[in-house]
Length: 215
Image (cartoon, rainbow, N blue to C red):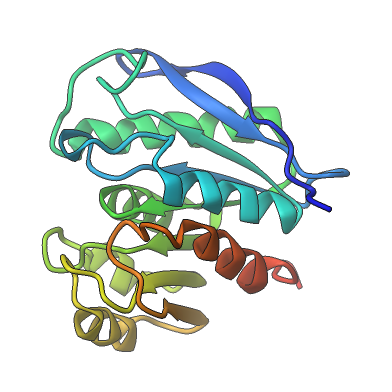
């Protein structure tokens, strides 16, 4: 029996205008709220990308409310692609939304590929965010120095056969991160976890089902 529920379509306020979003709710009262950013818009990434969809489902099964949203210029979100600068502003606006919608809950944040860089960078600097989540982070392409320098819990999921970011680079990146940290490598999976996206959700569900920054 599945505990997955359909996500509710929303518009949230963004710096350039409305941002298209989906809010996933768990069964029962949420114990945390998660904001997820999606892969590179110019590469076809959206909040519907399968690894983000399945990540949201897995986190909802772990008892979290999950907001995934389209960055500026994607779907019905206002604005145009801004190489990550404006997308960080979008991500902060999404955190503003969940903070107001779920007062008092822990906020966790991150995303997939490009969205992991945007989300974990913002999360590292924002005192409201207590944990970071990175799926297939492109550590060779973007500046992750803020992520490395920040002592907040971090949970990573990567594909063993990622054709864009070799798993060896992720292990080197992981070694530089401060504790607490966790890394799950999914056997045979490529960058977008094609045919294995469900395993991303399962990995995050397992990693975070008992986690609390307040424990």
